[in-house]
View 1 (tube, one colour):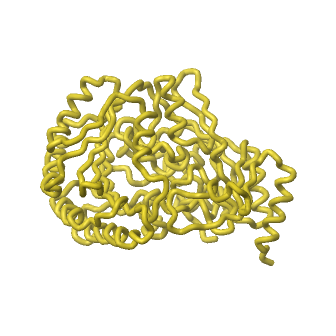
View 2 (cartoon, rainbow, N blue to C red):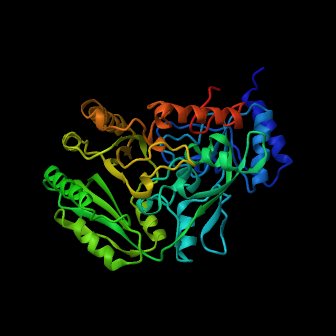
View 3 (spheres, rainbow, N blue to C red):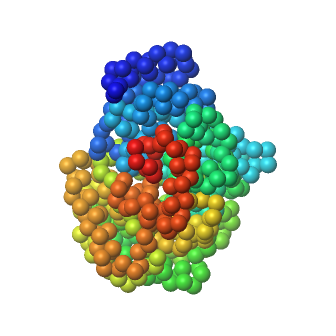
Length: 463
C-alpha cells in the first residue's frame, strides 16, 4: 500500500527525534524557501523536507530510513545543477552543504573534503597554502558533483579533468553502510557520480600554484561575425603551430551586453611563470582589437569569486551541448549564422570549451567516455526572465541540430552529462561504446540492485 505524504512526514519527524544532530527544515519552516531554492527556477518543486546531515553516520541513517519507509530522496552537494535534479517533488532533499570539512595531507599532495564542499571555500583554503586543485570557473558549484561527472574547467588542459584527480572516496552505499570506495567503486564514481551511493568524503590531488594569470579579454565586436571568424582562424593556427601551452586555457563566449553582442574570452595561465604567461597571452590579444582586459595575477580563489560575481543568483532555462572533433569550416560557418541570429536576451550566450592534453587522454580507471581532443559547444539559455526562456531555448536547440545535420562526421556521439537535459541523449552514447555502457549497467546492478539511488544521475536502472 502506498504511503501518503502525511504519513511520510510523520515517520520522518519520528526518525529525526532520535537523531537530533540532523538539521531539519520542514516545508512550513521559515527558512525552507531559501534553503531549498535552486539556481534554475524554471520547474519549481517542493521536496518532502530538507535535512542537513553533519556526519557520514547521519547520511547512513537517512539512507537506511528512506529505504525502510519507501521514501524517495535526492542528494544536494551544491544545488547548481542546470536541470534542478537535486530537488524532486515530495522527495526528501539530503542537503550535504554542512559537510564541508577540508583536510590537507602533510605532504601537501592531496586534500580530503566533505561531500558538500563548495569550490570557492576549497579554493580559498588551498590558496593559503599555495595550492590548487582543478575546479570549475564558478565558486558556488559543489566540488563533488562537478568532479565526479567529468569536471571541465580552466585547469583541465594542465592537470586533467576533475575526475582524473580523484584519489579516494568514502561512500554511503545502498545498504546504508559507510564504506571506503574500492578500485571498482572509484571507477564508477569517476564519471557516474552519485549513482552508486552518497559520497560523504572525497580525496583529490592538489598542486603547487601561488598565483595564476586570469581574467576576461573583450574584443571589439562592432562587426561581430568577422571579429569572431578572425579570432578563431588565428587561434586554430596557434594551436596547430604548438603555440598554446597546456598551462593556458582559453574559453570563448558570445554574450549579450547592454552595448550589444560581444566576443569575450576567459583566459587562465596556470603557472607561476608569469613572464611566459604574458608572452602567450599577447598572442591571444593579437587575434583582435582589445577593448577591455581584466587579466591579472591572482589566486584561483580570487578568480572563481570574480567569475561568480558576473553570474545572476538565479536563472530560468537550461543549456545544451554538442562535442565536435575539429574546428571545421562547416562548423565555423554554422556557428557564424547561429551567432548572427542569437536572441538579444540577457543570459543567452554561446561558449566554447576545449579539451586537450591530459583532459583529453584516456583514463581506464573511470567510466567517462569522451576522452579524445575535442571542443564542447555550449548553447546557454539561462535568462533572467521566465518569458524569455522559449525563444532562447529554441535558438540553442536549433543551432545544435543544424550542426548535427550538416556536419555529422565531425560530431562525437557523447555529450557532457552535466550539461545535457535528461533523456536528450541516450546514456549508451554518453557512456559508450556499448561494452563500456553495459559494464556500467552490470556494476550498477551489483552495487545497487534495488536502485536505492534511483533519483541520482545517471538513471541507469528503471525504478
